[in-house]
Image 1: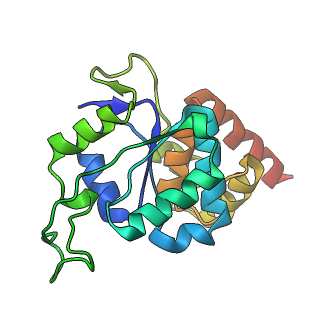
Image 2: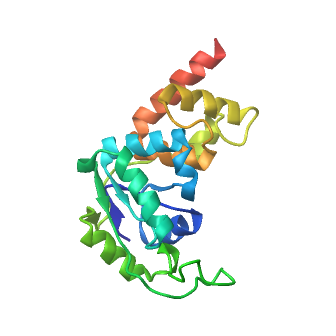
Length: 201
């Protein structure tokens, strides 16, 4: 499965789920639709991803998608942002009872091959072969260090997220994705161990 060097910014969870089926080991961040206009923490995470690895904005082709794209364009450095566009295709996603307001399919409704083609045309750095040797932090690492599934794991995550300048409302899965997008495994574990030491004092 291909992967991108950049992070991908999409509107919602169904778009994220669709891209996760076709891209391996690529950070995919949701704007939450128009929530991005008020969610300063998520916007700050997207800015950081843009600075660290670059981002590809991949919103729907309707008016709402273009408003969100415009907002992100205003907030991110132009040299760290690429824009992928889907064509106007009229229809209805399977999960919906009726078509969208404009009657167009969104990212989630597009075929996988078309989505990959859109990303390539945007100039995204698509790597066909897996990167060799880059070990990632795992969910079991979070559990082992008390950041998932344990007593006050949410509080411990919030403390770590504050230390690292990450949004405080990240779930365990969101934290894992952010850590793997921004840090090597060793850097992330060092930050976790340091935070544990501070928490125990």
